[in-house]
Image 1 (tube, rainbow, N blue to C red):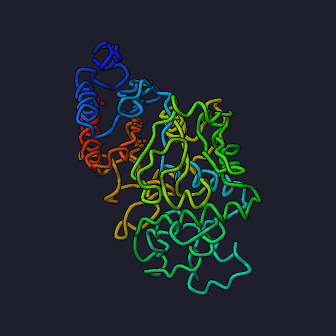
Image 2: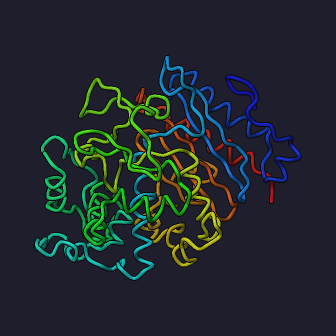
Image 3: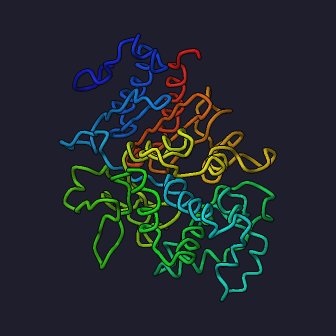
Length: 391
């Protein structure tokens, strides 16, 4: 494969076929990304592809932003946006579930004993995880709340739009509540919990939150990342309605995430393609971590990788989009297979346990905010799917 500065992809066709792909066909996927960078759909992107545990493609294209001397690399940090939901919220909750500390049938009201919350009767953790709680999708809390406590109070008072389990509606509010429930259940902040329970054991070395800490910004990840590294390590974003006209670097793009001081169950996580791939690799490896020890049990893996709701309602695992969900980002050729999640900033992760394929594509498409990255993602996934060798 030929990128802007030389040959990045060096597998021969024979080597590629042993890993399960046709490199000559995978060039089509690379061309989709190069054309998108050239067209100004996103300044740059990081991509990772593994098949049955073999690294097939790991590269960066373009620059952090137009005019930047810093090129995108696999080590570039992106605002992962809603990939926060499965990686930093659903994952630590599943760890607590396996320890017997929480149950999927627990009602939300259990964790807020000082509030009656009659309108949330029957809403369980499972409903929140699968977006079947009936809660609204999104509200502009950042416009009227002056503290994280006010945001949580406002979410708790939101009137459901449907009965629990009645319909699927992708809801940031549900995952904001899950993050707060985890804090109350463990007496630990979500950034700390995710770091110790998920990122560190899986080797997700650069995954973490950029949180407002004592009036400044601090990276709450596995290892320290000082603010001065942000300029050359983090892909910036723009077009946040809360901070119009500003370019954001090492600041969560999501307005409600900002109102929650950068740490929430729905958004706020930063990470690299390697970080995201480490989590997918664990799921495709039967729940085993990098040391070969169990991270999730086989039973938990099934709940996380297979839809847990009635197909007539939609498709969602305990954390991820799944068929027949229209949000499932498998492209045209994988629309009925695997599980996936996307992020508003232009991030995307997909895995298919049946074929052993895992794909991560991270962009800062919201830097331009044209919306064209959605078509690019579909075309990219189609080209990747077409590169697979027959089994």
